[in-house]
Image (cartoon, rainbow, N blue to C red):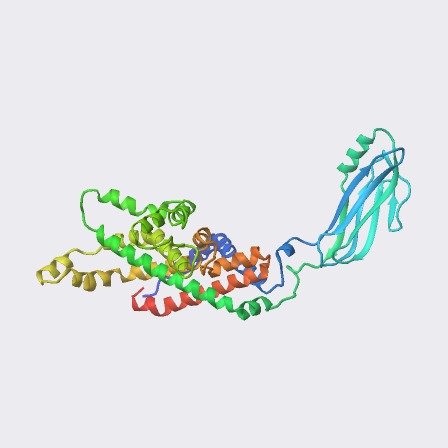
Length: 408
């Protein structure tokens, strides 16, 4: 039976009104998500360094030099860029009435008795010039200096910005893929991400199985299990560094005294042990998140299935494998997706523990080193784009195959 026409029109009007009310939120969320991504992609195809983020301008410094009866108004002019030219460069300045300019340079003129205008034409990158204009001062020189400082020169000129022009290049990506080190960094990232994610899930599952039964002190033990996740990362990272320090670390002292090794081990300073240690730190720090979600899902499973399995003589392993695991596959899949993305983007843990040295340099650390270590913003943005594309492909693969198999 079709709904009345009036009711259908009313429903359509309500739907349009709902979208109209949601439109500001949709626009704001879209801008928050899309604009940063667009900016990263834009910068990745630009030959831009850290210094290019500051626009090219004409910098003027004014100073009144006193001494004797004749004074000098000094102007220091320079191009803020060493490479980019400035067209129609110049400046204007208002000269206080207490200061009278005597001899003007050829490129400067004075109008209305107080408006100084200097024209430099087209100047190249790295342009610098200093000139002094003789002047007389009536009244106190200190007052004249203060008045001169209050009227700051106004620069003018047109400069092309590499950040906003239409010059594009793929040299940033070409240089990255030409480096043999890039594929080493990619392999390190995949190793750290995969084993860090799987390890966090496995330990989280084990902890959830351990605390899924009622016993005295259960709540306190759950609180202790959450400590690695809620503790400040800088505190726990430096605790690990101090404990495992090859010179003064207590763990190294203990294993040497026990005779397990003849000399101290540099856990965070040698390959491939450093990569293994930062991966273990990732597992230790983030397994509580998996533990919370898995435990919550376990407590929602119908207990009648386990009672029926006990009556049929099923072993604990059989109950876990054939009853618990199928019920947990959904939450495990979601946790794997989230932890994989978060671990792939992880920067602070590795940077605090090793600084990306000893074979622990991941793609996110590479972004920092390219953008701020060698001031190549374009190369850093190119690595960020690669990270974004890789995670996008991984997410599409996950939702196309894995999520369908798990019924998500």
